[in-house]
Amino acid sequence: MPIANPFELGRAADRSEEINIIPIRWGLVSSLGLFQHKYGTTKTALVPRTTEEDVLIEDRNWNERDNAMKGIERDILPLQIPHYPLDDAITPQDLDGQIDWRSITSGGNGLVTLDSVRAEKMERIRRAHANTLEFARVQALKDGTVFAPNGTVVTNYYDEFGVTRKVFDFELNSHTEEPKTKVDGVLRHIRQAVGGATMVGEVVAICSPEFFSALTTNSFVFESYQYFNQPQGAGVLNQRLDDNPFGLNRYYQSFRYGGITFIELGGEIAGRKFVEDGEAYAFPLGTNLFRTYFAPAERFGIVNTTAVESYYFEHMDEKRSIIEIMTETNFLNALLCPDAVVTLEVGG
Image 1 (cartoon, rainbow, N blue to C red):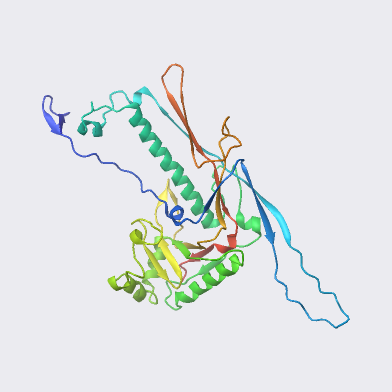
Image 2: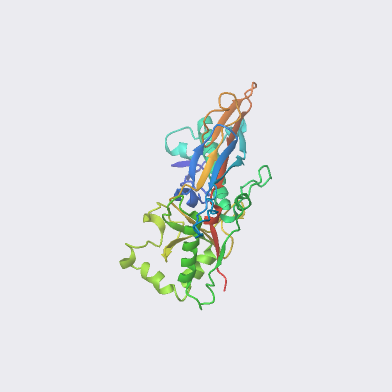
């Protein structure tokens, strides 16, 4: 549709389609369904823990009875839920003389409306909430800590459960040891860590590009990777996750090897990498050991009610000169079996 040419007064120019430069919308971990959502009514989640030990009964003489059954240990893990507020505003300057290119082609007057500005800001805010949740989940898997860069909450699940993060050196660049032996070790460790409390379904490893490339080009793995990328292997594995069982999009390459699905997760948010160079993090799906606890907003009519994932509030001042937008999301990602998440390194 022709519009006024800003370079030549009185002449027209064709309006091209709008170009939107938008960051990639990451959501791999959330799409996996790893974390179960729990909607609470307070800012604290109390997780009861019960620890049992297996017993082998030792033999004794017939006149001895000094074997005793070990007791069950019970305690409560208190978890404080962080608060993530995000505010914005709409002012008359956001509307004054602002062209809405989409309105021109649909027969409108070509100027933005309050509703269109509000919708655009809400979309950006929703993306920020989703990015924060996704990055916080990856950080929990990365090192077992809660994403709270300002230190309002300090939680390390490895300290809380008294375990040490297990690290497997895959020696992928040495080409002297078949990675399958390391994969077997990872699977054994995860199954042992989970124990009898729940069943392990799929084991997934989110990988840095360096780790994924080193794995798929390793001399012991390369032939398998090439085979599964051929049409005859499509029924077993799709290199891109467009048609994969997790329903993920084309941003992620994957490769199933030795019982673990390796998914490449490059990229970053606000300058912070998801996965550190040369590393991968493996964890089991299908358990109830990963949870996200949500807390309600601290406002009348909402406090002490069941939480939702995000809150959005608007307030217009008496002079009608600004609309304040106040949003928040309050959540905590919990690893209730941190020993079931392990780090894999390229090594070698």
